[in-house]
Image 1: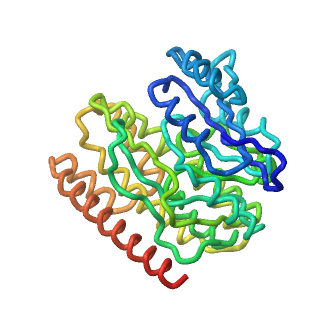
Image 2: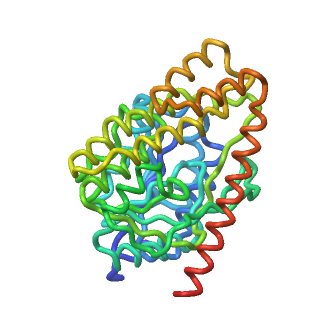
Length: 341
């Protein structure tokens, strides 16, 4: 970590919220400390972990005494811990990095110029390498969009179709986080998308670089613990549509047709988990109800019937094929854009 304050460059803080991820935290912190950019602070907020997180950080602080560490007195939850942490630095730009993800060495060096060149961009993001729990590469995630900068109106319209980043590893302007009051604590598991909607609603665009500058960890475990959070995740999507997107569209007099189409499409996407063996009958009933609130349609009813008949594998196969084709299309668009520039 280089903290040469004599260099006249914008200051950057890398903020790492963590809870019980000692096995990955040291790698995440090390990736933040290894940035090639000359003015970086690294902050860690421990949400009252019960594992060896304090010992991991203490060892790193012996080598890097400038590493800032705070342990919460009680567990605040994801959004509140994030909000406390992101409100601490007084730097111009703030990177939010989950404690199981990694920054590549040139992440800050590459994204700061994008934000400087586009003063109306509230945040910057990039393509990422998806990795598994053993650090093995899976797929490259990138956006299939042309051009670096997307203005606030374009961003808001695009947000109707979901969180339009390759992964939630972003560099924000501090003033934008403060203006939008950070994350909403009541939104669970979809708070990053909600924040992006509110940033666009406040008049800020965003800027995207197609270089792979970070690694995003995609989890898969035998107990399928994360899949059991689906209800809260879908409920979070309902909240964003009802409380953030729809009011923003209505305020501008825009048609709600794209939102309604997106809700139905998103419900179909989430419905692929309905025949998963780790859901109890009661959990399935709850999922069906929240899926209907997200976006009820004849197609959703058909998909639910197929799951009940044991044909869910057909739906999943179609979904995986569509994902692979989409990744291929994005890669081609990215190469064309790079060639033209």
